[in-house]
Image (cartoon, rainbow, N blue to C red; front, side, top):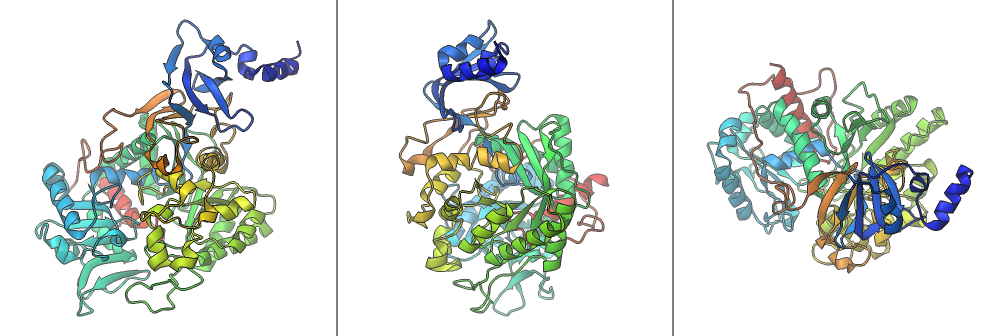
Length: 624
């Protein structure tokens, strides 16, 4: 019988083509659960067969079971729900690892940092439980406090942190990654005093005398604190960040992760980890185009790692009030007047040159733009690059797009720019956007997925961890409900159906990464990247989506996470506040904290550039 006729008959019978052609015996068959394929041609199935890490068959159990052999393992899903593994539309796989070695200062529901006394207690408790780490590192470090969620509605200061210790330096990092606070000892070690001037693109907040630093350091000023802490770490810690970050991502069902802005140091660390065989999920890396001169993208993975393209950062963070807007902030930050609109992190010419460089080399470029003024500049740069290179189709990506205007949606559609949006912001900072950042009117339209769908466009939704936990179910819930912490629905016109939100976490970001032929749906021939959830997201009440749990994650048919293992500890599946095993720390590092010969630029707003100094400090220390 002609092969195409056999395929046609197989389709009519509901039997997958590989099964119909007798492609072999399955290694594993998953059955007795709800299987959501994210494949419009076959939305649901009773069973899935896997062979050599790929999907062998999808369909009715009686048909799929014909692929079974004497050694086939049958996995009973026990009524749970299986989907394709989640594809990270934007996050920071390496930087997520920092959460594994610091005190968890996140506010509820991800932590207990609800006020300044609770932050101080968390730091004291962490210090008490991690004496060996403190002895080696010499610092107390916490991550994730959020002044907008603290009862005092302000940042902690050096005087607050001095209550924890005046002998040990203390550094706490804001959830946005834009701001850090040091105690008096940390400021002294970092060389920050009343004589220290604000760096370009950064601010040291001052006490009442307008001279003495109060410990709060914004943007580029924060780098000075981060660099001082970086002197405590070595390259082994760098590698542990990558391992712990991907481990946490797997616990939330991600089988493809992204390192959405790599430096030379983090890229080197990821390569070493990949070569060691320690990466259990795929990681796509985007080196900073302004900091890493030689970027060599590839479509092929090497030990679960590949360089996908280049990253560019144009502005900062809306909740940090450093995103670059066309209209003033609703309430300007301290020290700014009513016309304050944030600022660009780089010049217009740097933006134009970087995007043109990516097009000239046929590199995919992903661009951080939170403010609409930054998005305007990105659009201008893409138009200019396309005029010079009209045959390049590199799927440029808009990262965050928090204040994307309706007219800009039309523009990015025409230019083929893929929007990777951040609707999880509606939960974490939606109330703050409404009351302080953008005001009631503009806040309704942050991460405007409704406008994107009106244009018939695909989009991705992301977590941007470690700005927030890489909680896939929180991403799903926020995209569908847009409920804030207070329960308000922010921008009901931008809510999307659950089925659409699932595509924005699977098939569409797979397309974003040029991997739609291999990932994002449960189809014959694709990788057996799979996740098992506690219930069916299509049928549970929408206000319970964030209660769904990832029970197991499979990468190419192999289990890389199972809930109930050592990875599943409160308050999240990963371990917070734990000392990294085997951490070896030097006493001295090289003074040069930048990539040699590269002008370091600030303002990503994704927990990136401040830690770039830390990264390079770590890398330099390993060469001594």
